[in-house]
Amino acid sequence: MKYRIKFSKYGSMIFIGHLDMMRYFQKAIRRAEIPIAYSTGFSPHQIMSFAAPLGVGLYSGGEYLDIEVTEELSTAYMKEALNRTMAEGVEILSVKALPENAENAMASVAAAGYFIKIREGHEPDFRFGEGFDDFFTQPAIPYEKETKKSRKLLDLKEGIYDYTVTEDGIRLLVNASSSGNIKPGMIMDAYYAYLGKKPAEFDFVVTREETYTKNAEGRFISLDEVGRDI
Image 1 (cartoon, helix red, strand yellow):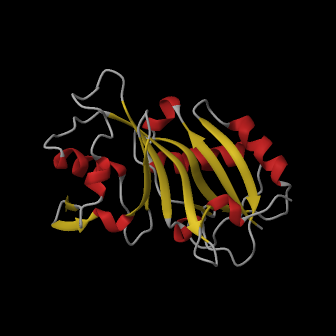
Image 2 (cartoon, helix red, strand yellow):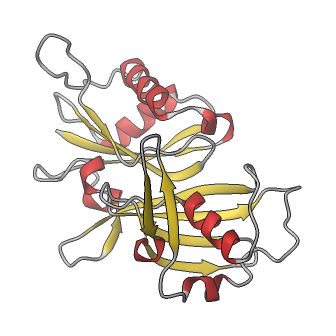
């Protein structure tokens, strides 16, 4: 049986990186006595797959991992058992049983929704969100992505599917697939550059609100909509 676990990340846990979160859940699953399946071979490991890794310092209400178990359990039981093992800063929001033909969490990610607001005490000298409509209606939004080995010029506009400017911040729906992952920090850098400004390192509070896949009709749905309660 395959199950998809949705969880939130907040408080001090936002500073725990992806690899440490993997280790955290490996231990939590053992403490919850979930009969997780293990790989075969020289070095057996728990069979689990996380969706898009979350950057350090970001909040989230839509993180996912898939696990395989050796016996069928009710989704309500798994949610309760796992929540009993969670430290403050991580909460299991749902557990769904997956169909046999479901892609794993990482492979199925298509988009992510983010909410970005200004950190208290870091208010800019302009209204945050001002000019974002004009910024987005540019024919292209160039961004130079720099890695340790190379530089690559991207057009961010191709990866911004939707946006809303609110009184409190900016809500974005962006490409989060492995082929074109757009990070909110890249968009903020480009937006500030358009205004002739440059953000400081800790100006923003970023929350990943949801992670999405596409259904058979090509519509974005949250990853937990693929599964069902049992």
